[in-house]
Length: 278
Length: 278
DNA sequence: CTAGTATATCTGATATACCAGTTGAAAAGA
DNA sequence: TCTTTTCAACTGGTATATCAGATATACTAG
Image (tube, rainbow over all chains, first blue to last red; front, side, top):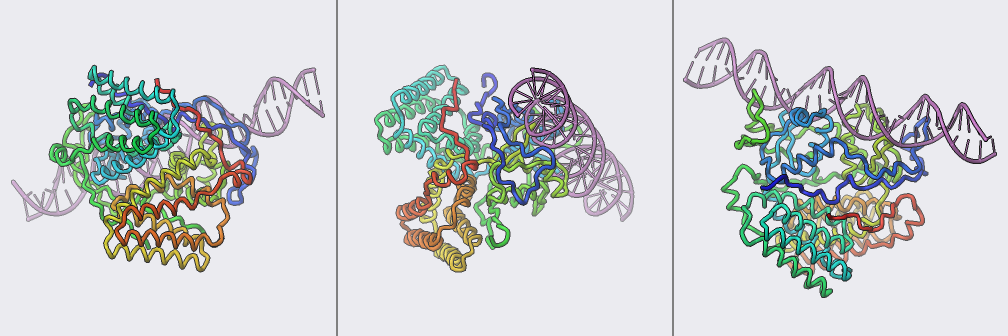
């Protein structure tokens, strides 16, 4: 609703630093050494920022629009068109679209067109259980590692979320929600698993955008988060996991309703045997 | 070693079919309709094969060499050089490299060069626990869903692995191993989770290529797999999960040894606080 | 009016050209 | 000999050109 979804791109590729490169000591047999210019070697660009490329920008923008359902499934996305709108060449646009294709957010049909991907129904249950399992790992670790200041930090995040709920700001609420889960992963010392969770969450999030913002749900979420924090504070790992699983199970809405409402937004890919091992 | 690693690219993007596209009924406000030529609409290319592109080929080849440690961390990979070797233009090569970058298999430094990524030490523990959690999900589901024929199929896969172990064929052994875990995910009706597992496994696999093929380990693995199958056959989900976790825990080798042996193959990225949420 | 076909015009895939940082070693200075 | 400076070669990022497949429309035959 209000303003653009910022959709904070948490820990994304771009932020990281190459961190310097050692000389490729073992010159590989298969790959020939460059005639002049020995292997790149030494500190390769400690550049604080791996300069945000145009492709990054376009990717972020398109991804935002897709996840926020501003671009509904089936919408055609033309490389040329986007290039014109963004006033760049088709190359970076293409790179952005390729990334989206890997995230399963668009489907590209070779000589026909690229379209915003429909939500694969079969992927939803998978995403839910996968997320449940992964968040179980992070919250258990968090309960085992959290110190006092980190617990306080989590409380602060919950409060931020409560405030967003009170003033009915779904965008801020959503962001606080993400930050909370991310913080738990970080405190559990498994930041990389949060990346995985985010990846899995994408399709779920798209689906949830379809559901109307359920009244009262926002307050409940904050309460459930607080229950998780209390378990972490108590150092009760099993309880923390249980609380988190309860929380995640709450968003198990039945899909059928929305299936009728927007049938074209989904693709019914039955779990047919797709692998035929020789 | 004997012959090229085939590194069966299990369920990869390419195999899937676009599956036809419905007319983009809701013409999105944000995106303008194409002047002539209404939206692509109808069955867009039921093409059995989304024609394997050159980029796919190059990607597969490079990925294979990296995962198999034929290209060790730090090795420079030049777009131009690969293009010349493969006798194609830089464009598809670039696309392949971009994909590898997303898989964290290469690091590209903008105006300097692209290098085979060092193994991020901090990612290893994360990958191990994430895999454990995810395989727990799939094996539990498999125990709940497996029918007689599927159990037999699993037995067959274990036997294939035993045969590979007997004739000391690590490549076939490795492939059988992958197929076994993939089959469990498929039987558990969570094929998508196998994709996740594979993604997480990559760095672990690279690391494991460094370790010498431990004598006797191959036979043990087959035995452990069989134990999992028996639990599945008995329909004992909890036992199956336990057996699988025992199995996965066995490959918990201490890293320090190999760290000394090939220090330049790893990057020590301590779990410093990388996210600073506003 | 309908069915079939031809064609204009989309599309993404690939090839090529150009640009601006980066780098390493030669060149210059001490 | 050692340090500093310069600079040409090489890199990945971007722009542009070309190609062939896929589609929708216009056209033709009946």
